[in-house]
Image (cartoon, helix red, strand yellow):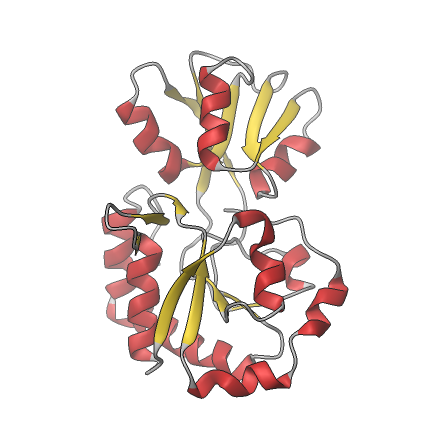
Length: 242
């Protein structure tokens, strides 16, 4: 899943105890709202998708009052740390790099495959490959010998780059790209895929350990009774279940 290029570790010191003490109040859930089926804005302008349903259920089980806010991907971690919201729930993979700045809940998905979307057959080892800035897919392409990385701010721009010839293929989460390939006859998923990331978790400030544990208990409850797998089957049908 996504891997934000981190702000400096100094930002982690900006969220003080006063923020952690505010958890008797409404918990603000920050998401991108632009990465279907994980999170997106529906026709009513409301956050929808897999993570909307997961987040609402977790808040109910943790007996927390929650509200949703949206934030652009490239500043989603700094704005968590600075207190603009309390939790990131935005298709964010658990990585060691991020863990230097924020904490994570237990994962609510297992690692999922990343796929290549192209107009035709492509040798990805030597291709120009598009990815959203700050994702694990962008980091993976940058580490490849022979491939050229081109980065874009939004997922939609990566797909547009393939269609207008700026890139040979885009690398992103398979569940995101599958729907696009089904809807556009000019695009196809390549057979090759990559297994990246450590599963998706909630991003939480390091000072908010009590909040993290409340969500961990709720996540485990959803795993135990099968409700998390039911939502994975509904929204991410090709993803592995717990």
